[in-house]
Figure 1 (cartoon, rainbow, N blue to C red):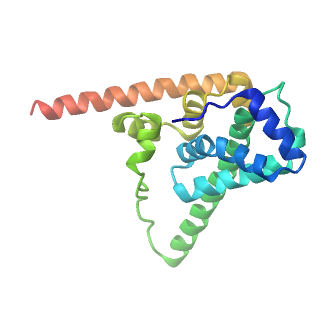
Figure 2: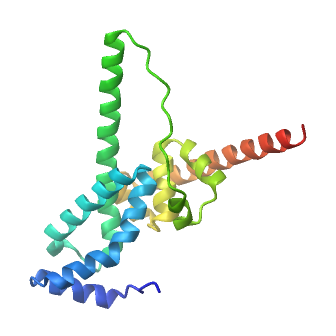
Length: 201
């Protein structure tokens, strides 16, 4: 049976954690870990990287717990904003690593191979109830728009919270979601037309 996270209970756990109660810190962690990890996985599509980002987010949150303001956001939302930042750091490191690897291949006289999509466990799709066709289309949406869609609809963040997580303005966050909608709808329409054409052959 899923545990309901009550705001007053969470605040009490935070206060006990700040007072040095390790059991409260462990409970606070366990309450929020699954949702935070799920968001990190959706953003990174790699289990190991998602776990690293989640661990870094919790380390930062617990070391800066006195800075948390319950009047500005819930603790869960604060964690989502932090983990989004960690995911963006990992994505930047990934892009740099791929660029360096490409440079080495070119210098050695080899053509780079096409990238192969990483394996994604079926259980991750079940967690968020996303059908395979929709998820595959979402992966083709440009990165910034894809991040915005994930934060908005799977992370449940408001536009101001998204802007804070992504380091952009509220209007930019809105435009990224709108653009993501447009691209996703076009991709799904193309896929549906292809499957219809294939089935009638």
